[in-house]
Image (cartoon, rainbow, N blue to C red; front, side):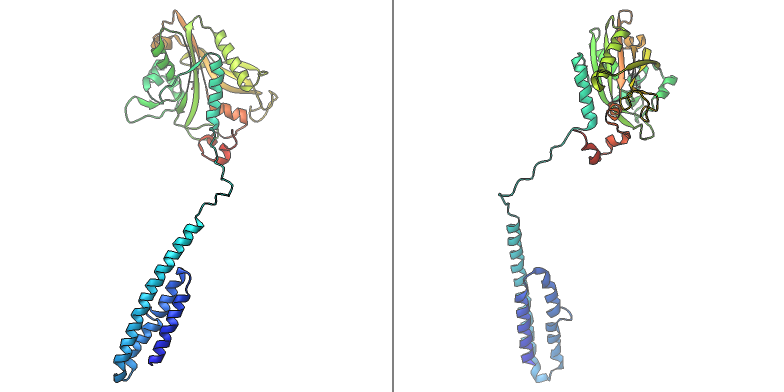
Length: 342
Ligand code: PHE
């Protein structure tokens, strides 16, 4: 019986030394020292021996068990150290490998379009004027000639805050009032870019947030001819020198007269296609001569000063320019879309 025990001890010791990978340790442990392990069984077997053999056998069996447990801990420690060493070796930098090129980011298509618009207007002497996204009802509506309850307010679906009278701007036009109040009675030539917000159903054509670029010129003897000249020139610089531009009478409460500007469809050259809905024309912006009431709210005497204003949507313009069919791509954060620009 003692011999079998010694043989078993040897077998276990050899099996343990043969283990090269720490993942195999668990199996060894349960095979020998586990609840049904061979050594555990051998310790229990003491009960089957004649009483005079029990003390010697029992002592040796327990000794072996403890020795194997210690050997197990030692081997586990060794293997742990080995695997740390080899992991470090595997981690070493191979300085002869070619480097991974950094992937430069790029500008968002809306930002690119905005910058193109700034560049064109800068050449015409317009400076960028930054105005806030969070506005009061007065700036967004009342001082743009839309008193409370005026039905024209229905043109803009508004986000309200819990603070009465504080809203997210529905267009960049409130910036007109800020610029006028800052500069009056000096002449003004600015563009006002930035995010606008409307409480709308999100569809392929409309988003709840989008950029606008407002333009404002105020001074003495500014006429509709200045407005037309500026915008025709803009359309041609933005979309190509041959562009046809037309002004269509329209209505905005803060301009009088008001117009919408169309240009011949850049995709079909005015022949008629799906994008221009077979009209041959694409609407690019709204504009007009600043309403006397708005000039007065801005601090200018409408008997002396006049001005023009316009507002356009850069995402819309980018859509026309690049044939983008769905405005939701702009804020969808899909790299497959964004990577196509720049
Ligand atoms: N604010 C108008 C809109 O959002 C556009 C506009 C701006 C029209 C300036 C005329 C003058 O629809």
